Image (cartoon, rainbow, N blue to C red):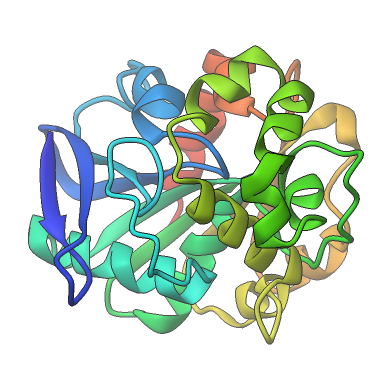
Length: 256
């Protein structure tokens, strides 16, 4: 495990580092998750192994610190990740981002274009989400204000997300979880989709084949984004179908 201070107060992001060749791969988890838990097997898969890999937990989640005075916007997450990558040393990274981690990856590429060599987005958030307390994830969490979320909403969310997701979500700082969800649901301005369309670097979007493709897939393709369906999986593609994910990811990361 490695760590680096990423805020003026010295709050630390931590990551598990796998040795290997460059270019370096940076893996980013989704809301309420932890990158080592969700991506370790994928990073070690024979089709993806051999690269120096940073399995990084966003500030507020997993192994990283959970400051209560941090805003947890997508922009702030991206800047904190950039500071951690600078401390880790690589000049450029290939970024693999799942769900919210994909949204952070897009913002990272926009705000720190010198740092990102290519993007592999794994069923990433691209658009605004309507808050709905009945749903799990960012939509349900964003439907609470922070006071009521801390006073009991977190417990209600725990019952809805199920034991697998809760196993890592319970490690998140409550403020971090709520603020990240609210900002993810609100999206950036312009939206992550609009930012993605304007990026000038190799970009691939993986999605579960059962979903029939992401919204606006034709516009993504027209802008040069490769849209790739992965069979036999849900939202957690790398966990549900490790071999299918590794094959699609390896092909995407080899594209020019």
